Every structure is written in structure tokens, then in C-alpha cells.
Image (cartoon, rainbow, N blue to C red; front, side, top):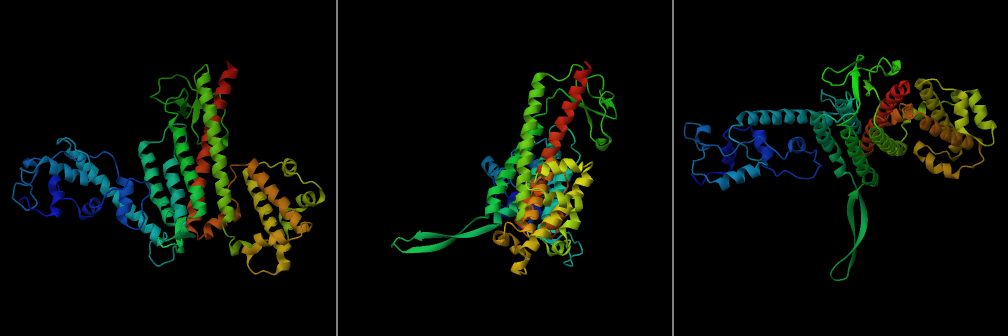
Length: 478
């Protein structure tokens, strides 16, 4: 009996594992957060790797089958051998009275395995379940996956409170899998190497692509900081009221929704409530600190997102849709202001326009951006270059006194000032077109990751401002 095969060791736990589960545990579990997306097993590791387990202690004779079988371990099996098997499976011993927890744990493993198989299949099929090859490209699929994951985890989280542990684990596991693609996006650089005989050779060494090498660690850090900000509100002096009343499990009395009037445009956001005397100075200091941190994170994520979008190629479909006249696109009044002044001030122009809604601001951004590229194309048309991708290089050769060049530069400064004044502005038509037609997987990951972090940081700042608004309203009435 001591010479049993290695394949029978999995029956030491007293259950019949599925073939897929046995294959997963035949590999050692890595400690690094990145997981390869080349196989279904690697996805399982990213989702199920844990420091605790529901597997039980060594099983006694009663836990095995009553009939003799080659897979029945004898009662004389040593504890050291049992420990070795459990260590190989990456589990910790539990009490023998936790059989139900074992089954629940195994069922959760199977469910997560099936879920990851489905996600992996959608990535390969490009979201085309027919398998006919008509799906979107890999870059767009991964971008959509990150966006949908953010909506699943943070879509219903509208309060300053720690994220649900299950959702937090889901966010980490799924993002580790999606971001692991970047581990294989590399660039090659030549490096001189001297042999033992003194011969000098040039060898090619791979390293992460420069944009991923710089931006991805920064985005991971911003992600961890935002989660930390939410976790810091576990013990807070304020609470939230739904439908004008305090939650039934709250020990506080009175709701201040009747005092604080909420704008109709934010009717879905829970209303924060504070004690009758307002927040303490310590709570206000904590809120100010977290607001400043979230504001800086928002600026950093927005800068990364803008940089990635600027590096994306302009689709031919957008170039074909550009107006023939930039003057007609932005309107006569804005055109005269941009061209008629010696020193252009975009902030003053925005003040004169009196933009009343986000829709108007987005329309202005689209028209200004289209005019900017129209004027740039006219400034470079004398070079007769067929590729629109050469515009950036050609702009250095353009006469700086050219009217089209001046208008393009002023339109760019106006667009920048507009985005700074309205940070919650939706993406412009060009940005949306770039994302839809992008084929670069690395740029797709960086753009979508920075975009969702930018949105989360902006929401945190808005939620903190809501708490301050209620606190000021309550203290002013006192």
C-alpha cells in the first residue's frame, strides 16, 4: 500500500475531485499578483488563491468508502505525508467537523472557474458569441471588460464607506487577470555584452514597453490609494438617509434631509446626515485631507488618460467627418474673438459664453476640437502628405505666423481650458472614436484603467463635498 501512485494522493481528503480541479492543484500557486491569460488554469489561480482554506484535517477511516479500493489510503499513513499533500494543494488544515464548509468552498471554486472560462472565451471571441469572427478587436474587448468590471464593483457604491469585502476581492482578482496582459507587452533594446575572451556583442534585451512601464505602476498606486480612502470611512460621524429618513438600524435620531435641499440632478445619491451640532473638528479635518488626496488622484488619473488618448492614432473615419471650414464649425462670434485679439484669453471667452449645462459644454468641446484639426490639416496641406499621422511632425515645419496655425493653437488652449473648468465633462467625439477604433492593447488597458480611476476619484470628492454642504447647512441654522 505504500507504493501507491502519485495520482491517488488527491483522494486523501475523502472526496472525489473533478478533473479540472485536480489539474489546477498540480501546479504551484505563484505569489505574484500578475497572472497569465494564456490558459483557463491561470485565471483560476488569480481568482481562488487564498491564505485560508476550508479543507479539513487528515480524514479518518470513517470518512472514506467502506469498500476497499486502490484510492483508499490506509490508516497507517503518517501525519507528515498528509501534511505534504495538504501543502501541495496550498491549503491549511481545518477541523474534521467542517465538511460542509469544504463542500461550499469547492462549489465556489467551480463557480469561479466557470465564470473565468466565460470571461476568457469572450476575450478570445471579441464578444461575438457566434464565433464567426465578427467581434470587436482584443483592445476594445479588454477596454469594455475593465469598464464593465468598474460598473459591477463601484456602480452601486454611492457612499463614503468601505467597499464590500466580496466586491473588493472581485475587483482585485479581475483586474490582476486583465492587467496581466501587460506583462507580455515588451519592447526590445540593444545592449552591449562582453564575452570572456574580450569579444563585444550586441544582444537584444526585452523590457516592458515604455508607456506601460511608466503609467501602469502609477495607476496601481492610485487604485490602492482610492481603496484606502474608502476604507478610512469605516468609523464616521455622519450617516446616510434614504427617502428622507434615517436607516432603521441607526441609533441616531432625526434626519436633515428636510433641511438640506438636494438638486434634482442628483436625486439618486443618498443624502448624508450629520449630528444636530454638526461634525467635530477632527472629522472635518479628516474629510478635508481625504478630499485633497482624492482631488490629486483625480488630476493624476486625468493627466495619464489625456496622455494616452493623445498618443492614439486619429481614425480615418473621424478625419473624413471633419468640416471643410473650422469657422463654420465653431460659429462666427467665437471665430472673430479668436482671430481678432492679439492676446487670446480662453478663460475670458468661456466667461462670455455663459455655458449653462454639461450638454452645451460638450457640444462646444466637439466643435472646437473639430475646428482645431481642420486648421491643422490646412496648415500642413502644402506638404501633400497622404497620411494624417504625419501631422504632428509636420507642424514643426509650419510657419508660426500662418493664420491656420494660430487658430489651431488657440483652439487647443480653449479646449484645454474648457476641460479644466468642467472636469466631469464626458468624452468628446474624437476620444470616443479613438477608443472604438484603437488596436493597441496596451493603450486600451491604460486608457480604460485611468478613466475608471478618474471617475471614482471624482465621485469621492463629490461625496465629501455633499457631507460638507450638509454640515454647513446644519451649523448655520444652529
